[in-house]
Length: 312
Image (cartoon, rainbow, N blue to C red):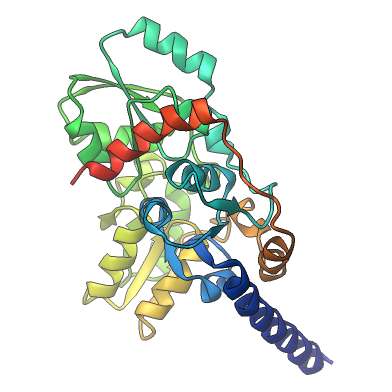
């Protein structure tokens, strides 16, 4: 029975992939997938990447339609950078709790309290918040962005863990918002210690969205892309991974002979995983849900994203 169910599932996926190729051609569409997506989505993506790479691809593409397989703020960023493109997402319920932890009114109040500060917003924010921001960043370029800003005082939103990590490498005063990633913040020192006991030869690679005391345990600390690159190039054969488990797809693709152990089974973002192959096909069939950003908001937010893309 199990073999029959598996064969049926494989046949369904084959049919869905064929339909997807047909729709992509008809719509002149490109599929962008974040590293935290399900394997079945990463397999069919034109580009897999972190928020920074996918923002670049959205800005550069000649496609008429962008299917953004990630969470809502990523689709917004794509629409802001490519206003003349149609941007659709597989499931409009794919939100980001961390992005929801910062609001425009609170940010405006903080700006009043610190009139000389410049606002650096993690890309994990809504378009409304980006419109109140001087420059955006991702975990891949956060330190470069902070150091590029023409001010010694930085208002940082919304991730306190990434903000704490960046603050250790800059002389700038950072006023840090109290947000966090539900998934990364769940990882504890105890989880890592237990995994190190089970895998004493493994290196611990960790995302700076994790708690400071967990980040301090890392043999390597970096963005999702940096972690993937480090594991690919390292001589080490075993890794304990402290980031979302969708990263395992690219890690295994790049290094099939190495072993990867996620630091806890709870490193799963339910919002990222709400998307699946069937929903990708359906959104291209219906061209819904489509992302819309009011022009006034988009024009302001675009400045903060374009400034980020200019930082080298």
